[in-house]
Length: 194
Image (tube, rainbow, N blue to C red; front, side, top):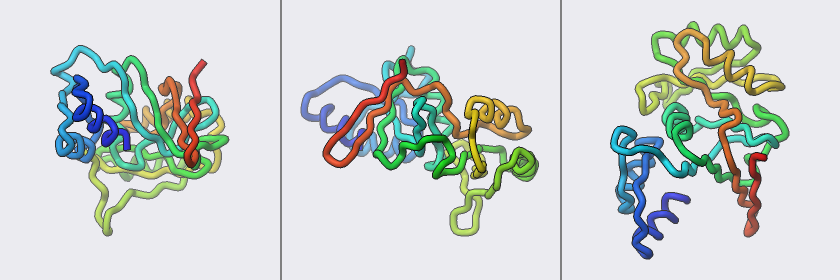
C-alpha cells in the first residue's frame, strides 16, 4: 500500500526519492512502479523507513518477519533516522506473542540446534515450510516460527534468542519503532514513542 502511494507521488509530483527495499518482492514492486532504488553502500543514510509489522504492543515493540524478510528489515530500520510502522487495527495486541509466533532466521545447518534451544526456552517451534520444502529467506536462510506461551519481557527474550548458535536474527523489534500509524476502517490514529 505504501509503495504504491509513494510511486503515485513520484509520478504525479515528481518528488525526488531513492528507496532501499527490505525484500526482493518489495524491490520488484518498486522497480515496476518506477521508484528509484539504492543499495546501502550507495547512500550515506536513510531519512525514514516505513514498514509493516505482524504485532504491535502498547510500548511500540513489534513482531516482524512473517513475510520472511526480518533481517533486511532490521538492517534498514537500524540505519534510518526515523522508523514508522503502518498496521491495521488487528495488529495491535496487549502483549507480543498474543496472536503470532516469533520468526527466527537461522542458517540451515543450525536449524535443528536452534529449534531445540528455543524449545528449551519454552517455545513450540516449527520450521517454516512452503509446500513441504523449507522456506528460504532472501538471504538463503531458514525460518523457525517459535510460539511462546507468554512474552513478559520482549527485550530479554530478544537478547536470549540472538545468542543462540546459528541464529541470524529474530522477529522481536524492541524499542525500534518511532511511530505507529494504525488504520481502522476509514479512520486512522498515530502512536508515538515518548
